[in-house]
Amino acid sequence: MRPIPYGKQFVDDSDIRSVVDVLSSDWLTQGPNVCDFERALCQKFESECATVLSSGTASLHLVGLALGWKAGDVVLTTPITFLASANCILYAGAKPDFVDIDACSYTIDVEKLETKLKQYDACGNRVKAVVAVDYAGQPCRWESLRQLADKYEFQLVDDGCHAIGAKYKTVPIGSSKYADATVFSFHPVKHITTGEGGAVLTDNRELDEKIKTLRTHGITKDKSLLEKNDGPWYYEMHELGFNYRITNIQCALGLSQLKKLDRFIKRRRQIAAYYDGIFGEDERFIIPQTTPEAEHAYHLYPLQIKFDDISVVKDVFFQHLRERKIFCQVHYIPVHLQPYYRRRFGFKEGDFPVSEEFYKREVSIPIYPALENTEMEYVGAEIVESIAEHCLT
Ligand SMILES: Cc1ncc(COP(=O)(O)O)c(C=O)c1O
Image 1 (tube, rainbow, N blue to C red):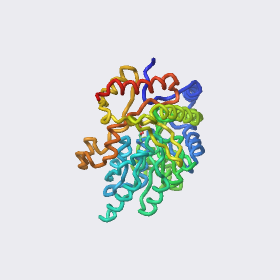
Image 2 (cartoon, rainbow, N blue to C red):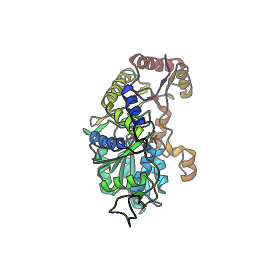
Image 3 (cartoon, rainbow, N blue to C red):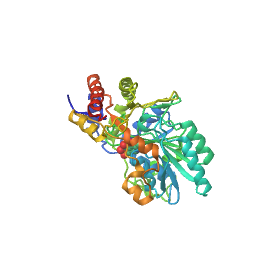
Image 4 (cartoon, protein in one colour):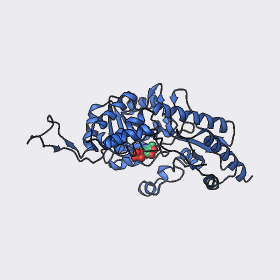
């Protein structure tokens, strides 16, 4: 049996051909595939604008800057996410705070969000933005979030890095129907890959223009914006930007991968359905819930195992599976408990109990398009066996 990671890219001959073609073209960095990939993303996800960038983290960074986050602003997210969802708040100089997750969907608890918004309002400190994460590929309650955003006047960002191919009320994540901007990541464990890469999708043209300028050092060549024009070589820097460009080579891969997205999602859902069948009726486990309004994209299959109830040590369970070449992961260590966040902001254990309990139980078990049926069955059987073998009661 080959090693089985929790997630992995699927790259085939057509992807390789697309990349090799670019290598023999004139365009390695910026080139036609960049705009083509942006157009293809707009079409696939029903968005007016898209900007592709060097990573999901860079995308979140520029969204915060383009939305004008600054010192004194408060921006909220959830503890069960990758660090980048919270770090982007710090990059802009704003203050991060958290809202606990909902115990069923593992996405932001909308009722707790409203309580927190009221608390900030009562202190005269309005929340500037919310970064809501479609954790594991499960869309947040976007309609309710939009209503709150309108009522409390905050900017709504969809961290959709896990949800490429997911839908909420038949609308693709990325459409910007509910959020002001959506961020994707094309890291190899995600649904489609460009090696490293990311994108911001939005219907707001002004926001999109700002992000495109910040992507390349804050430089503009747009004649209508120049303060003067010395000649065809001339450009001006109007903002402090970055080199967050993605290459023509990477975008060729992205374009080729995007064509396979529906197939990838179908396979992820098949695997999830198999795991649901294995673990769904067993009270030692809690399987990820889906809601009728959302179509899950299963970037992850977050299985909860009631380690405390059945007296199994999580560490021992992991070791057992690793010895059998099954490499699970945990998503995520709650961000507020990271030493940096504790030290700088005083967060502590007990602040977000649902997230902390979820962290103790969560195990991301292998799910990716290239996972074969025999491997998926092996994973299911080994997990059940490991629990039986290490149960101390
Ligand atoms: C929820 C979430 N947001 C943001 C990111 C950052 O994306 P990238 O790794 O492309 O920088 C990730 C990556 O794992 C993620 O899972």
